[in-house]
Length: 230
Image 1 (cartoon, rainbow, N blue to C red):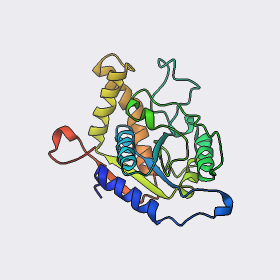
Image 2: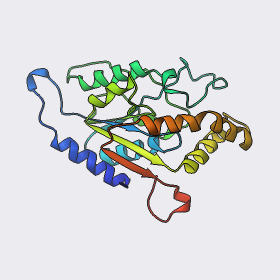
Image 3: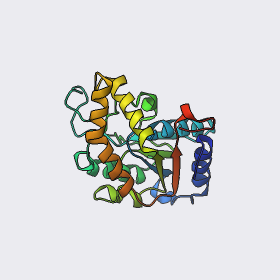
């Protein structure tokens, strides 16, 4: 089904309000956890950021945590990094561990830190990428709904599972533009080749293995539509 930013934010708030009050003896706050997945170029980072901003404006705290990370320890050297690598090159176990930590987080002082750095293209969501005590936490990443282990464990840890679908050519053009804008590739032909030799297969894998969706978001090319989209 199609969803607007406000529709998704409303769903998140409704789901949060419907949560039972936690056991006070465990010193835990009521918290809604959302896993938001999608293939490269689907716009999931932007969607998560927009939804979080709307939720925060309602008075309920919401944060976004990107769990894509990178197979490398640092993003300082981008020359050798393939921005969207296969699932097994990402830190799946670390992603599961982070979701578990936040799920079990108490109201007492803590120091939970995300081990993931933000992709250079995700600057819009940077100020929301925090692991804290927000009432609603959106875990945004390529593989957070993947049925393969260890990623599959995330589904049982969250309350909501959202998946972003995008037409293949729309996703391709977005990723190609990103390669050029961020300097991963210097010309259009090289950017297209990079997508066609890497990201397209990753997109197919993500579409095929992302299961257990509570919400399917249709991401459209806003330049070619008069309606609302992502």
